[in-house]
Each structure stands twice: as C-alpha cells, then as structure tokens.
Length: 174
Image (cartoon, rainbow, N blue to C red; front, top):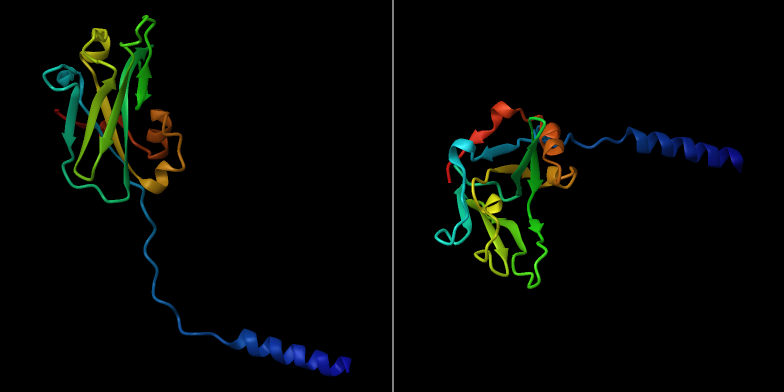
C-alpha cells in the first residue's frame, strides 16, 4: 500500500510541476518617484493682508496627477545659516485673555492650485507682523504612496528621500 501511495505522490508531483501556462503580458516599468518643489524666494515675499483675504493661491504650471499629494512648509526661521521649515497646518497661540489672536496657517489643494491661508477667530485683530509679512513658503508635490512612507513634518527628510537638491527648487511668484 505504501508503494502505491508513493507512486501516486511521485506521479502527481511530476504532473503538477510540469504544467506551465502561457507567459503573461509584460509588466510596467518601475515607478520613479518624482517630487517637485516650488518656493517664493526672498525676492518675492508674501504678505497676508485684509486686502488679499489673508490668503494666496498658487496655480500649478501643469495639472497634478490625481494621486499626487501637496505638502506645504513655511520658513519659520534661519538657525546657524540653515532654514527651519515648518509644516502646515501650523497653529500659533498667544497669551491674551480673549484668545482672539490665535491663528493657523493652513492650506488646501486641487489638481490645479494650492491655496495657503490664515484662519482663526480674527486674523486682522493684530496678528504680529512677523507672522503676516515677508512670508516664504515651499510647496512640495509628491506621489501619495511616497507621502505615506515619510515623515511629512520634516522637510529635510522629505527632500532627502526624494533626493532633491536646492538647485531643483523652482522659483514661483504669487
């Protein structure tokens, strides 16, 4: 009986390993993660005012792919010659009784543009000018699957993983 079972096992093994179907269609080439960075440089500071409704819109030069993600960073400071990029949304709290000066830099985006804006109780109730005048932003466009695998709050981590160089940052005008 053991010889018969062994014979069936060997024959079955040969039959099932010998069957090959037709070759499938060729797969797509590997995906090359491409990130794009836009910045309004110091030659093109942005000022949030009541006249522009405390907002700015940047129209992308070409429509984004539907799966792209937009990350926005504000130049918060320069420490020892190194820029300190702060990830949006970014909320500031002030120690006042009414709490009316608390505000947030925020943004939204579509495939055609990104809008950066101040929001809060009342941005015109004097938000200090260092937060409304001479602002510089970096807008980073990345594929969604990349954005899920990186520390988005850290601009340097994003730039390093995308292998982006400062020379690749594209100057924009709002």
